[in-house]
Each structure stands twice: as structure tokens, then as C-alpha cells.
Length: 156
Image 1 (cartoon, rainbow, N blue to C red):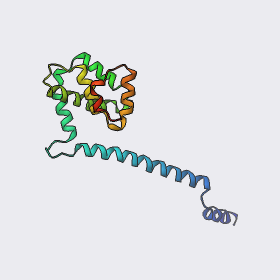
Image 2 (image 1 turned 30 degrees about the vertical axis):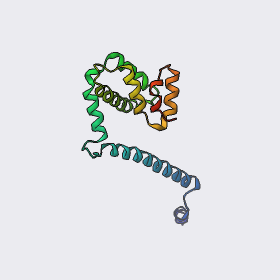
Image 3 (image 1 turned 90 degrees about the vertical axis):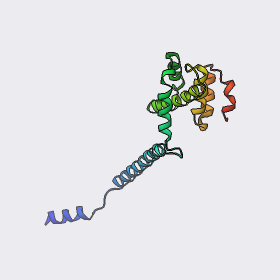
Image 4 (image 1 turned 120 degrees about the horizontal axis):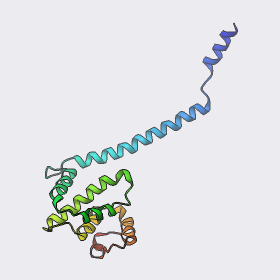
């Protein structure tokens, strides 16, 4: 008899508020994480879609990196590493690739024999998203890099 009434009380009692609040908290954390991950996956997906010319943005980046590979000197590579220093670690390789593609495009279109410091600065400014121009200027000034010839490319 005693066991029957005890089992009945356990079956009829609801979960504690602490448990329910913990479940609600983790539900929001997981949903938020999935939304953030989905946002970045969608951005990557949009970069892979072909444009009117049949090539995607990533295809063009790879094309310019490969086309300009022989133009890169050790000094230019070291300067590129310095330019991508402020980018957070997990995103640094992707940023370096897209900036190198823009620098390579500029150097190839200028018919240069090698990638110069000016190509690097101009490509860095063009490849940097407009929303980050404030940080770009702060970084260039902090490292005493003359960007005045390309100031017209920066929209503060």
C-alpha cells in the first residue's frame, strides 16, 4: 500500500522549475548557435553561386591567387601577414586568401613584375569590407603605413 501511494505521488508531480528553466535556457542557446552557424553557412553558399560570367566569387579569388603566385616575393608575403594580423585567428586564413586575391588582381592588371608594397596596401583597402574601414585606418596609422594615395578608396 505504501509503495502504491509513493509511486502515485512521483508520477503526478511535475518537473521542478529549475529543470524547466535550464531546459528553456539551453533551448535558446542551441537555437541561437544554429542561427549563427546558418548565417555563416549561407554567406559561404552565396559566395559559391556562379555570377553572370559563370564563375563564383571563390572561383575568381582562386584564379587571381594562382595567376599572381609567381609575382609574390618573400617581402610581399611578410607584409601580407602583417596586414592580416588584426583578423581573429579562425578567420585569418580566409581573410588572407581574399586579400591576396585582390592584391594579385591589381598586380596582374598593372602588368607588374612583382607584388609591391603599394599593391598590397591598395588591395588590402579594396578587399576590406566597408564596415571595417574605421579599424582599417586605425591599423594603418598604428603601423605607420602610408595610405594617403589610396585615401579615396576609404569611405569613413
